[in-house]
Image (cartoon, rainbow, N blue to C red):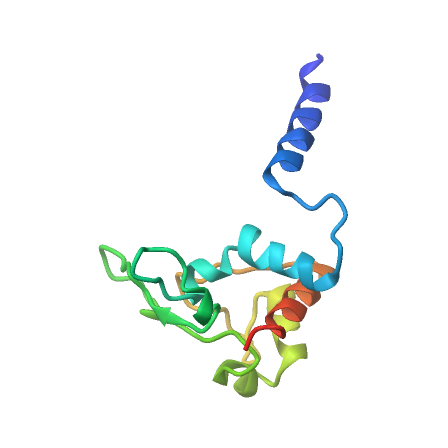
Length: 139
């Protein structure tokens, strides 16, 4: 029965090697880590550069999705919105508090879930606030 004790130690070591923040420096840094490395927001909300990497000059500004489902999926979004504070989504939803509420409940201000391929996130208040703090730094 040593396996249950070994697994947490191995996982902790793996997280340390892969950059998991053992104690995040600031709320913005933690939010950046969550948005870019855990939730992978930039993968769908950032256009790609010619070389296939993310175009960091347009970070989280929205894009046309480069993939589509093989069959029809109800409410599938062919584009992703600009999720920076300068984007229309922040204004339509009512700003920072609405973005935090969305990330903690998974529901838009209308009380619906975002359509696919957007996953339904139900983050902790702390994590949602950190992501929004990070998004506020993007112009």
